[in-house]
Amino acid sequence: MKRQQRGISFIGLLFVCVFLVCAGILAAQVLPTLIELQNITKAVNRAKEGSTVVEVRTLFDKSAQIDDIKSITGKDLEITKEGDKTVVAFAYTREIHMAGPAFLLLKYNGKSK
Image 1 (cartoon, rainbow, N blue to C red):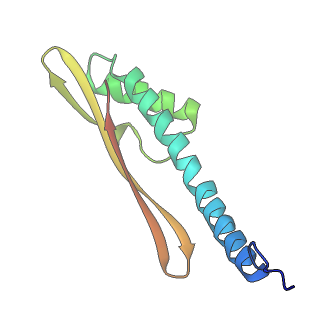
Image 2: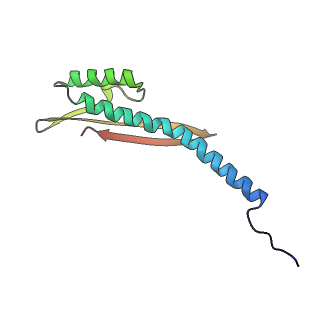
Image 3: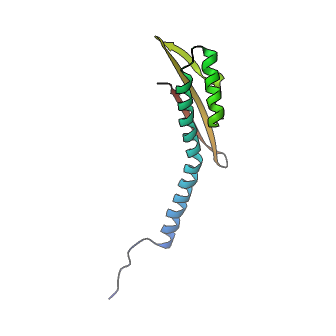
C-alpha cells in the first residue's frame, strides 16, 4: 500500500523561511522609529508645561538630548493655546531604504494630551 505524504515540502519551507526573514528585517528597521515616537510623545508632554513658546521648545530640546531624539527639534513643534492649555503638536516622516529603489515611508504625527 502506498502512503500519502503530508506536510510542507522543502521548497515550501524555504519560501516560509524567506518570508519570515524579510518580515524580521522589516520589523528590525521599523521598531527603532516606534521607540523614538514614544520618546517624542513623552518629551512633548513634558514640554507643554512651559509658559512661553521659547520655554516649551527649550524643554523639548533638553528632553530630546536626554532621550536621543534625532528626527525633530524644538523648532519643528507647533505650539498653540486651546483655552488656558498649551497644546504642542508635531509631525515628521521617516524613510527606510528597503532594496534598490524601494523605500518605506513612515509618517508620524501627534500632540500633547
